[in-house]
Image 1 (cartoon, one colour):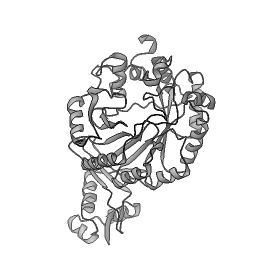
Image 2 (cartoon, one colour):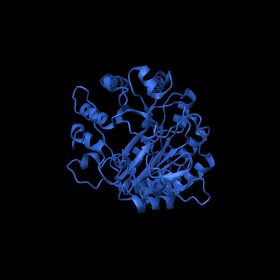
Image 3 (spheres, one colour):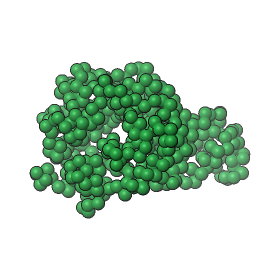
Image 4 (cartoon, helix red, strand yellow):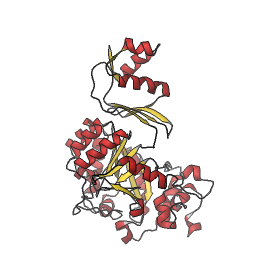
Length: 405
């Protein structure tokens, strides 16, 4: 019997994050493994079509394990497409690329940091993204996040999803879900999209539509969420808290719970169009903090370390390679994928050399909870890239809105 790694499966060993796992992209199932299993699966991958007998000559006592891997579908006994299934991250933490495919968007969200709209003209060419993917493969990048604008407007989306599948990537798409069709859902399934992240800002359709700038967007998003829930694709909802929904935020959370989709609450940041709004960001954060502490609402507090300056690069729709979606000015730029001399490895090294220690330098009792918070917010509100992110301070209970006020 010949052995092959299932083309739908990728196997990751990230030395920086001390994580080794198998991810079944077809069934969206993650399994933690150890170094020994990673070595065995790497050996099978590097010796395509290896017989069980020859495998047992190198690794004895694996009969039951191989049978289990075949039963789980991690291994196949028929030839599989080579999809860069094995990735070992050792030199730089090259985990993730965050790609803004276009600055075109069919909505006109009031809080949009990028002033995205249909009249915009920046869109990445599929050839340049192809070069980016090929360089990413060599660096063992394993996560591609696609955003916009509205990424479902990208005309070469199907071609791109196929390329990312063949490159062995885990794909997350940030979309408003208003233009999703049955055809697009089939594309998501065909090319094993891992996760969809969308937004709902009120349980009242009129309020949501006014905030998102287009009548009917609420119904379209909700209906498409319900369609996606019939698949195994992961779903998450972002909800912005502000004057548009603070009076009915309890009902909005209960509505999201009825949809049975995990939600993340966030406050509006005065960037882009949001500069024109009369929002008190820290007051909204205090509302979120109070919601996290209410047992009747039962919303879980999750503040994760995004890995800025270390584990990801952001690619803007004009090709600029920058630190993150909110840190895009000249001092945070490392290259442009449209340039003939574009070198992803150099960009990553330049980023880590300059910002590899980017974190909150202020000592407090809550740092293990907030992971230092957001550096873009620290710069915006405190004019200190290494200072406190007051949003995270309030969320974690280090201080309150009234104390800051």
